[in-house]
Length: 200
Image (cartoon, rainbow, N blue to C red; front, side, top):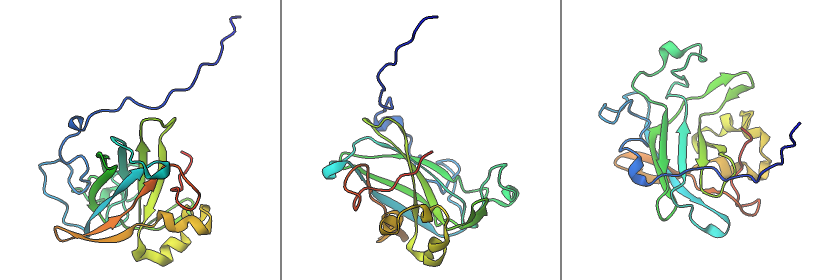
């Protein structure tokens, strides 16, 4: 029997230039870039930065977001109410960070729903892929509008109380008539500043 020796781990990749992404990839409100945005729910903007320890920007990081529609439904066979899901809402998008580590998504304020673990507060799931990471990082952002639902959310409850505020987006004005929320991610740093991430 041939003995196999372990090899060193590699960082995830490859990563692509911004020209690889199509206009509208970061817009969850449309099923295609040419389609009209959904008329259901409140359209919002999510934006922020992705930084490393010391506040160094993560350039050309890939961000993926997915969420329920405004009524808390998914157009997916696993959702028993999939037939009622918003047909004009894509629910998934991809963005990238620029030279300042900034990203932006356009979406709708999601609805809450119930799963096996219990009632889930409205939230957006995020995955970050960046040069130097050994695996994808997954987290979730919650909204300040739903304090009671956030307090009962079983996933947010897994985070130590002192760090839960790091998963709640902050109001950040308006853009083109849409409420804007800011959610900055710190990939590494002191516990008080590092974004909580979840095992996949």
